[in-house]
Picture (cartoon, rainbow, N blue to C red):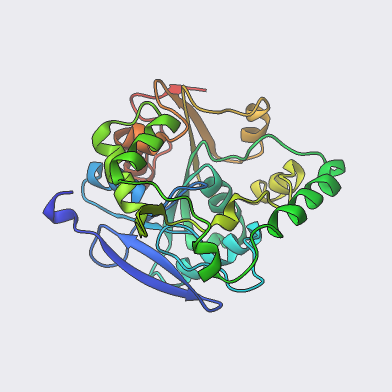
Length: 300
């Protein structure tokens, strides 16, 4: 990372939990990125480098990256992320644009609907939800959740010992490339370093193992649609050509009053890892008050 993009991290407390806010800009950011499941805020570093001038900050959601883990008897319910992001936005001096990847897109879209005075625009990176679940699946999902959480009991200190140890940062980078073969060696090594910490005999990912349990709440499209209907800010929705798209994506986009959707050829699900330049161009366009596809994106 270049010297003029020195990373700064501060913590915002919400309900006794410390949330990490990473920033590549002096003062209050104009754009805030929210990562996806099993990712972390610092993975937006290449987007920050591609922006001119740099305007970006990125948060670690609870239990990920450098943010705090829930305590004894706690759990990561999806609605808690809405409250956490609301607290982070309250800690900023002015409204910002939100960039949300995957899980982070669902969080950002909900918060744009719930706290409209705090959000200027939305850039969603494969961020309009997974395949929908049926309400009839709720009982089965709850059963899976109950069985799973009972295998990961105890305080954070006990859960830390449940993390799988890998011998070196190079091995961690190899695991990331196995998940996304498009990652360069350099970027996979940087991600492994920022998303891990030393442990006995090697390294471990910073994420709380409790995140590996199935959520008690299925993704219900009707609930998400009710929130999307309330979004009034412009939305740019970008998808990787080699990523994941729900079968009903066009119908989901149709709910939004002001949306433009496009595909980035060659990018995987982790669009911001693969094509940070395209993401940065989308941010700059939205900041300029325009809703337009980046040059390398094709209309969806």
